[in-house]
Image 1 (cartoon, rainbow, N blue to C red):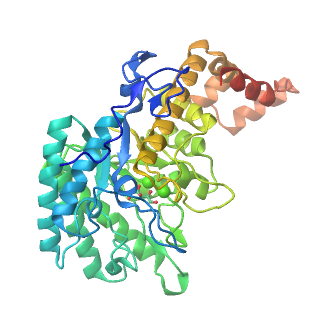
Image 2 (cartoon, rainbow, N blue to C red):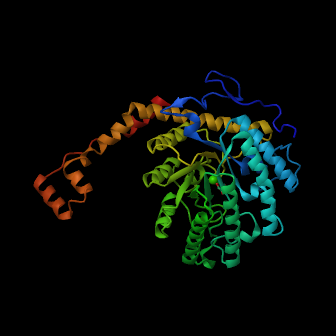
Image 3 (cartoon, rainbow, N blue to C red):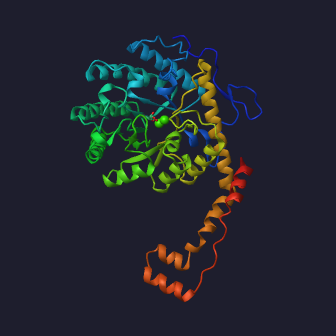
Length: 437
Ligand code: XLS
Ligand code: CA
Ligand code: CA
């Protein structure tokens, strides 16, 4: 096959002084930062659906992107060719991972049997290319939202046949993910929510969603798939409300249905802001509860308010994300998946490189800044001191569950008044972060 990205050589690290737009200024894969290489910390992944299937059409106009390797048909041969173009891109960019939905990589057929056959034919090429390049599958997933059959949802559809169809599709997607050595599998409930409560039995739909995930957990055991399951929170779009709306809603759902040992979270930056939270809030919540698994690294536009899926360039975001990750000891099966697309006006193949290089450099800087903050320990020491009253005396006794309200009353009545709190030093800490950035 002719090279898809003929004008571009393998992207090299040239350092902060470089003026070459097609070089890394900060991401140096083998450089060791706080005990691990950057590649090991960051585990970058390319999202197949955006990088190779999204032509950047919108509701006002058709696709703009030039994808010269693509013949524009829905044939299996074209899908196979696209895989080769994708792996050329992964290799030249120097990422270790990619992610896909079943229907991104292979065309949907007239029946499930035909779709499965198409998928197998493309998976064969995915496997060949993985073996040739060493690029691995971070996670697989199934597209349970694009086909009209899923108009009412998939696991939460009012139609039991649709639930069964979705289960069959997920079973196949899990088998394929296992075959490709995928390190994880994502459940994103695209249409698992509602448009209006007037036609919705919410309790029944939630039970069905849980049943679906329990079936997936069982099937995982049955086929011996060892990858990590993730649920990806998002509050809305395309639904008015999606049941797995944010990290806290997912955690409550997983606990209620006894699924918490089986699924972690895949936190997406843009979904966090759609839910009215910061990216860091969602990461911290997940990490604090031991369920932070993987990250969809992108950025939204707060003025637009929909899922714009832009490439991450904000150094505060990447720094805070890496602080949380370093604190929790880093990824195990997860990684930083660029669930992002180029702008509609960035229509040339080379733009795909610029976009990913920028995202990788932004996270590399975030990692270095976070590692420096962690090494100096000023921030961590401040937080530790702020909670110092819990380390001994009454604080330690309360934490240990030794005291009740009666003992607290006795303690305060005896003590009389309490000493004023120390300052939270909000501005000083904000200034401190700027010193490192
Ligand atoms: C859509 C989601 C989707 C998931 C995978 O908004 O981000 O792409 O990551 O199904
Ligand atoms: Ca995502
Ligand atoms: Ca998104």
